[in-house]
Structure formats: structure tokens, C-alpha cells
Image 1 (cartoon, rainbow, N blue to C red):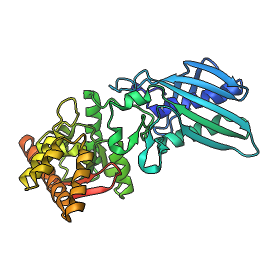
Image 2 (tube, rainbow, N blue to C red; image 1 turned 180 degrees about the vertical axis):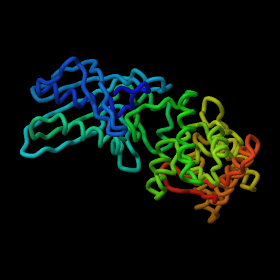
Image 3 (cartoon, helix red, strand yellow; image 1 turned 45 degrees about the vertical axis):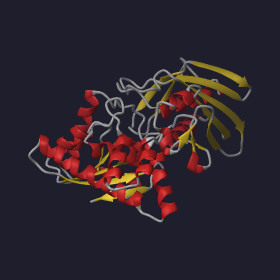
Image 4 (cartoon, helix red, strand yellow; image 1 turned 120 degrees about the vertical axis):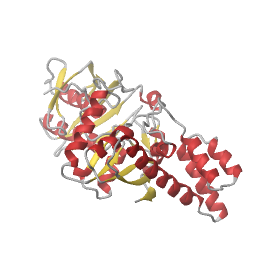
Length: 359
């Protein structure tokens, strides 16, 4: 079954790997491969743009990203899969990232190939192997390093390339009216069984929410449409919401910015600096915050100031930010709906460590 949405990067990386295996087995037909997406339980037919042997047991296969109607920066970017098969008494799969695949700073430069991508690759590789082999797969994104400069990867400690991130093979158009309606429909359906929901802007929040022990059936992905989703929750008579997100995104709500896409509004450092100044932080430090490169680097400026002065400004400022986000959100809801919703907030940093809560 084909999806009108298009597919995520892990799907195309998997298709390149599977194509390489089938080519070495003389089993590649029509320059396309069928991939089991696992989530959702569907099959996808992925075209193979180019393929060639490097040696008798090594193949390079190329696919090209097609995310559907999603305004995705990876559209049409090539994904290379370098596959090496070596006969072995037992099957072993080694997956690594090459040029253009990001490196995770906090994991010693480990390739930014996350759980779903690993699972998808391993599952489909095993389904296409004829004999026991050592299977070595290197995923290469020749445009990845350049494209990564347009993302927030570095804020999450991923450098030098893109992440193979996600929990689904379907690429969802996060900027389209149709996708917003799907998110709202999901929210309404979940509100029928739960009077508390957990809003997560993106995959990082969803992943952390599960690790924190939240019930997956209460998790709702909002993307950048916080305002619309909050009002929808009120109309659905949801009693309480926890906003779980990266501090560099949710801080916008502390400045009453309720659509968080950077193309519409930013102001993150300005909001942080204004709050810090309002609370009485030294003006020299406020100037450093205002001119910081990112909200993550601003957080480190605050932490360093606390270490040097045995103070607790970081905790004080971010607790205030969390409270401000909650109060602004509650007011926003009442400006557009008659049903009040209690808002809680959990902010995390690039290491996905919680830095502030308000409940």
C-alpha cells in the first residue's frame, strides 16, 4: 500500500541497503525494492536511482528522498547505501553512518541513526538475505552536512550531518492544513479516553515522553501548531495538558508566540533576556544572553555564571519561563474558548535532561 504522504529518510536508507543485497544476489528487478515499513504495517515500493558493483562483494545503491507534500529540506536529496556481504557461519549486521550522517556529541561521535532506522534496516535486511553473511552497511548522505546547517540538529548535540530519526516510515507534512487537521483528529480521539494529554512538538519530545513513563495513548504530536492544538483540546473538554518540549522551542510561548515555526517568528533570545533582566540578573550577563548564538549556548552561559558565583539563576529563570509558558497558554485558550484547561510544562535541554517543570 502506498502512502500519499511520502516517506522518511530511514525508508530510503533501507531501500538502498536492500537494493545492494539483492543486486549482489542477482535478485534486483525493475530497479525498485519493496520495504516493510513496520510502523505503519504497510509496504512501500522505493525506486532505485542508480546501482553498481564496487567489487565482487560490495555494491553502492542510490535512492532519492521523496517526502511527499511535506516541505522537507531533504526533498530530492540522494541517499547512498554502501553494502558489503561476506559469507559467514552466522548472520551479523553492522550499520554505520558515513559522510553527511550526523554524529552525536554526547555518545562519542556515534552515528545519528536512531532506533526506528536501525530496526527498519535490520528487519528488511534479514528478510532479503539468502544465506548467512556478515552484512556491513554504510549510509552516506552526500548533501547531509550542508542541509544540516538549516536544521536544529546542533541544538540536540548532532553535528556534521542529518539524523536518521523518526518513529514511522511515513513522512508527514508538518506545515500543511491537512496535517494539522489529522493532528486535531488524533487529539479528539485520544480525548475520548483521557482527560489529560501530553503535547509533544516533535520526535525528541515523543521519545522522551515514553522514557519518562507517560502512557503512549496520551501523547499527542503538535508540531509547531501549539495555539491551534491548545484550543482544539479545550473544545474537546480536555481538563489538563502537559507541554513537553525542548526549551529552545517552548520558550516562544513565554513571549506569547503560539506558532513556533522559525519562519513565522523567533524572538527566543530576546524573550530569555527580557525575563532574566526582569528577574534582576546582572546586566552584563543579560548582554551575553542577548548575543548568544543559540538558546542552548545561552543556557550554558547561565550555568557557568552560577558555577562561578555559587548562585541559582538558571533554576530561577527557567522555572519562571515554565510558569510563564503555562499561564500564557491558559490565557490563550480562554481568549479563544470558554472551557479552561490546566497547563503543566516540562522543559528539556539538548541532552534530553529535564531543566524545569511547572505543574
